Image (cartoon, rainbow, N blue to C red; front, side):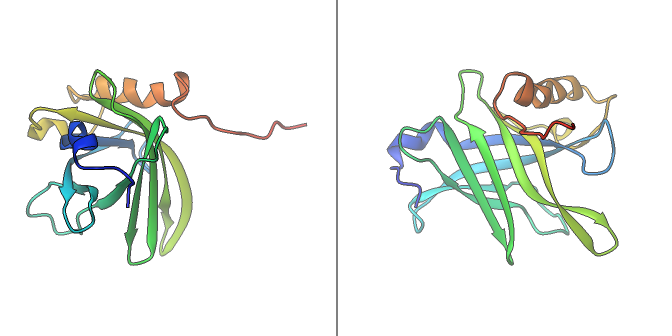
Amino acid sequence: MGRYTREETQNYVGDYVFARPSFHEDGLIHAFHMEVVWDREAAALLVREAARGKQTPLQFGKIYIPRASMHIFVLSNEHGWLKKVILSQLDVYKRMKGIMLTMGHAFGNLYTPVAMPVVMNRYDKIESHMVGKIDRSSRMYEEYNRDLLAVEEDQFAKWIRLKPR
């Protein structure tokens, strides 16, 4: 699937925090405990939410790593609802930065396409204060916010905009 072997990707296996801005609340970051694991049946890496006891469905995706690419791709298909994440490869600081394209809740039963910066940082241990709703008073806010801002500032992703006349 991903065109790679288990041995080639062992450095990706582990625990991560996946962080993204809130769809609706300015200054709020949502952070999820994610695990990257090797799936023998798929012969590929999978990323899945590690939260236990949640009422909502856990997030998951398959990881694709094309040869000679500096990026990895995560594709999630949940009952036809696609989510695509493009991330830089894992750096020496155990961080990956990129963008996510998904559907965001607009209002009522209406959804609209959304693109946003995301980061996936690897940690030896994920503690409770590192995940959930991260607001400006959280001790993780500055780190996640800095990494999210770096997606565009350091050109891990580029937004193409039309210029008004």
